[in-house]
Length: 170
Image (cartoon, rainbow, N blue to C red):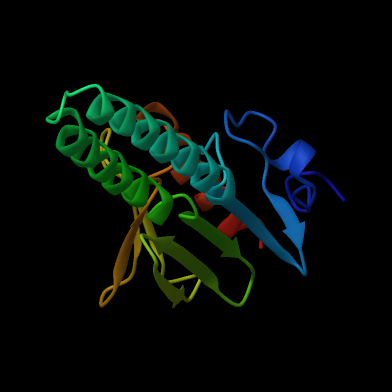
């Protein structure tokens, strides 16, 4: 048969023009995974924070012993502020989006700040829209979800095109 009647079923040929990483083929479904770009794991982050807090405490104790009494309260405020910032960072370190497209369903799963969600759509009724440089909207008449938070804005339109292509291939 010709290629027009039997579209390619591997990611190398189906998504060869894509600027994004190619989707994986898992259990008869195209799967995209997007994660936040984190340069440090939460365990490493804890180690850095503990060493920072100990260093600040040692410096504050030394300054206290030399007569500079106001250094200790400011060091404590500094450690609390850095701790709060690192806590916000750690809460979002495991954020992800996962899109799975098969002939039975389009499944969108996400985790954002400790909250998780999942929506499932029928592949023939789903609508995928890339709105300018905003997020990609996936939805039907009653439900919708926005994806692409972990992509650069210029790549979101390519993601929408690739998702539509995967629906046609499934």
